[in-house]
Length: 431
Image (tube, rainbow, N blue to C red; front, side, top):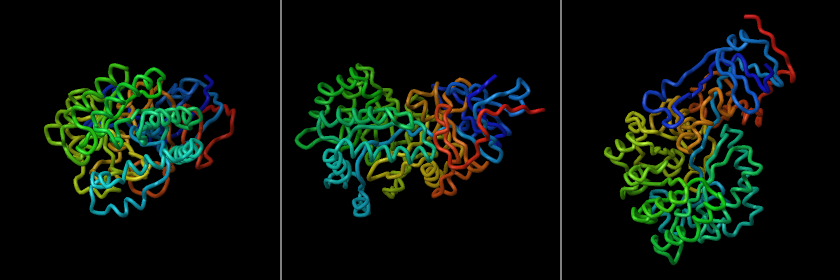
């Protein structure tokens, strides 16, 4: 058999194989399958073989366009970042420094936060936004992200929302990573509107065009007393589903007004933040297919004193997802190995649990679990080769990029170490 790429003698391969509709839950996250002296064979961008190196060569003489000897390395699936606020333009570092001791609600009500980023986006040219965002995507790809969710939401009118979603489509054309677009029109209430008035305009004037032109796969709403209420969320979710769009939510970050409970009852694909949820709501999540999105980058940056019950959410059996929440103010970190480090430090997670939450569980939450998120035969070959054989080091040296190589759809897109053998090699191994 002739393959496009063969990786052999992997010291430790963490496959993250799991139910593509349910993900890994509870103890399953820690018990993910690990293979020593492993091999992966790739054909036409898909994984054709996963198993022991000697098993691969016992079957046949292997010919490959490229081969990689990954001795001394660990291999993982590519990271899937299921919650970002890309595209954005500019940063809000000064605001974060000035916000010491304030809640995010205080910042927004004082004219900061989202409103500052909306102004920056509306004043920037398309060219500037595209260049800024493409640079950020290249950076996070170097750190192992192979699929990323991107949101609109930095606009104060329907036209601005459409502009952002069209920019995301342009970014998709040349992006090194797969992009899942989300319409976050319900991010902030524009000046001159009540929350209900803005939701009605979004439902009547924006979502039909988004669905017709396939500008987004999902929608998102920020449920808080200072943004959108439960009634708004119900109308928004109903309209989204009627158009074939999948609703998600930011909820219970600052206040609990029932956002998580409503997200589960309305079968949202995800409810993210969840700092203020109750034991009852945690149990509801555990019995549902609504993902619990943990965003430790925001908890770290905002110095949150009230962390989400992330440890308990895993133990309860919820579908727990780890994402960066990459944005210019409250979580200016897009590198998933750093986010994994934050999660292990803040949430008392193990490295395996954090990796599972950032791969297969993230894929399930985005509806792509059958195609990505784990290293299994038939799935897309989105693969990371680490610089050593200890994936447990991911949360330990957070300032150092642990990724040696990124393989996207079977193509080597980032090579931080020269570990490729000669092209067109024919390998014969006696076992």
